[in-house]
Length: 44
Length: 277
Picture 1 (cartoon, each protein chain N blue to C red):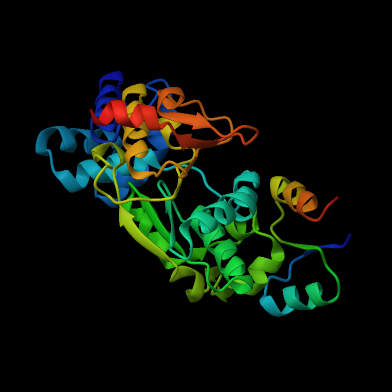
Picture 2 (picture 1 turned 45 degrees about the horizontal axis):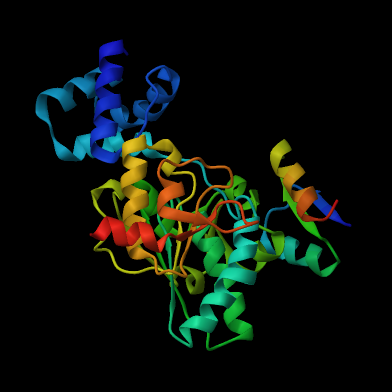
């Protein structure tokens, strides 16, 4: 499972990450609840 | 804010919208009404309440009540109801409707995340079955929430709460610092301001009603009225979706729970017949 945590928040970077195999993608500023939910979404 | 002023707000919300506002939650009342007071040009919440009392102006009253009604929402909140909508509710209804449209109402849509989550799913279902027709209506008491919902604009925090990243990449475009949902999704939804306690029996028929986490914020009397009205707009095979653990007055008589599906209910035909008599 691959989760990107990054400051990059534009569609081009998101699509590039998805094409590279990302299961989820979390953008700054990070929030604990969102990180937990995204990990569940990604199957972790 | 004095106890007397709080009591006025509590009564106003109960009478106008059936809202149950706890008088001891002073912080909540103040945090919701401070922006209204500022926007309407009052120096304090007390001045706002005095103006409501003295002038009885409808726009000011509704701005206040609507601010108190605001609730929390997110994309795919609770997950299961959205999966059940796609995998169970829509396929069952599609078989019995034989090509006719399936009508879905998000009854307290707030800023739109619920109905957009459903509309995205409907679009994806229609890709594999082009004969499938699903129509969405969305309503809220709050004009401000409806305006935001219709704009389709969400901030970065909102699009990361519940929305899978693949759907963000496919259905959203960046608009400054915000994200705007695609026109193809927005076009699937009709919007309307509806006060749930104002009577629902004439608003039309719906096959599925999402009414989650709103009735539990209303008085028991208002809950019973809305629940009774909902039995008149749903057909016998229609589905009412409440919050997962939501306790609602009158639900046990007017609706029958769908076994093994928390929050899902079908109308009780005997109740409707008795209520209509």
